[in-house]
Image (cartoon, rainbow, N blue to C red; front, side, top):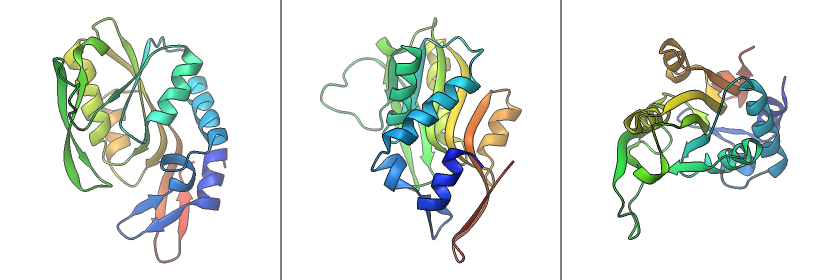
Length: 192
């Protein structure tokens, strides 16, 4: 069992609807020690990849992406889910359904931040059905860049996202892959 699986068993809570609540250390309150370990492990797993940009989606992936960008010493870009008064640039736009929030999001990256020469490592906190990952892949492809890998903190292995991305030929690495969760007993098992 690795460091993240141990932390999930210690501090994670399963809520109705097959949702793992780990916001005490990953995506509401951030445990910097865990973030450092996640980033270091992802960099180790993608050691052969040439990366010149890290891409994630707001908001929960930003902490992991920032730590990983620091290790690679490359820029970090995050796809935004909502327009602001200063988001007037031309942009690449895609659609992603959020399993957690149960809604479709338009996500975008301003064109000046993704280029055809980019070799992009996509990262996120969770991988369930793969909608966010596919939206990020679409943004990279719209820019003419190359996806060199997809790094995930927690993959819900009982859902199709990870297996589908791997079947499509993407190098996907997840630190913790959940095999099964049971809300009634609050038990979690992980894939080997």
